[in-house]
Amino acid sequence: MRRRGVLEREERPATAGLGDVRVAVVGQIEAMTYNVVASLGLAGVEAEVWAPGACSRLRASRFVARFHEVPDRLFRPMGEALAEMLAPAFAEREISIAVPADYDGFAWLADHAVDLTPTRAFPMPSRELIEFYNDKWRMATACARAGIDTPLTCLLERPADLDGLDRLRGRGPIVVKPLTAGDSFGVYVLDSTDELAAHLVSDDRPGNELPLIVQEHVPGRDLDVTVVANVGRVTDAVVSEHVAGSRTLRYFDHPRAVEVAGRIAAIGCYHGVLDFDFREDPATGRLVVVDTNPRLTGSTLVKTWAGANLPVQGVRMAMGLAHEPRSGTAAGFHRPVGPELVAAIGRGWWRADNAPTRAALRCAISDLGYHRARQATPV
Image (cartoon, rainbow, N blue to C red; front, side, top):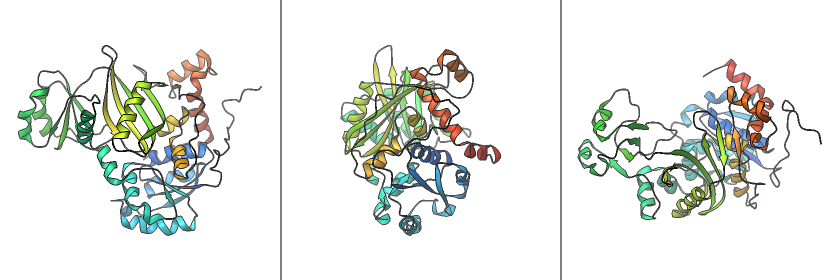
């Protein structure tokens, strides 16, 4: 059988049962929105985008069936006015499913899904549960009660609390971060608790405003674990890590981490896509959960390339369709353009573990219009 050339466009048929589904992606961050529409498009699912003008380069993407520009004021903040605008638009366009592209979108849709009827919402829990899983202090406390290992964690609400951090004193480096921010904003590693007072008043430390979480720094490797949960029961999972000293991502099976993620999802009978940051110390075998993210994350498209299409799985769940199991564990390497990619080609481009890298390159080549638009009008 002839191998498909890497420069040859790969058109994939629609996922079983989704051929007539029309999806609306609502987002205010271009990269996050593109991750979702490209994942859907690679599975043959038609997606229209409702976003502010700052995301207008998405018009050039072959994965965007139609781009609808929304006044920026309706996203700041997302609320009832946005729902009032989108409800008739979704009805006119016969939209089947509304998919949020970022955390604000998930929280907004949890509040306003009923206002968009008959359009269905991407699977997610209540607004209260979304905020619960996004709150680092509440999650650390809940995990401790459930017997799930987390870094030793303290809450710093006011400067006077600096005197109450005895449990962390003398334990080496600490991690300081906001209660609810994501994408590593405001995360700092300090050598000890003695540096906290200076950290709080520093002018060059964005995200250092109280309240803050202070945690012990657990040595080891970072793991990204994402699960799809159906009312607290995990139906699929994908695990990855950065290869040391490179930008390459390795996807592999890690049953223990998935089991712990499932226990956390079960705490609140979580429904939908839930992402975790884990830390694993190879020297001791200790595995701790560091963060939970109740949303699709910035690595959504990379996971699609590795074989775990989370947006499609969520759409299937929202439509009441049976879970469509993957052919195997998401595995292999995603190597970015550069020396690591050249080395991979030299070692054997068609090796099975290069499948995610091949998928990424096919995706980029098939959507050259969008990537040219990005280069022509940089943000």
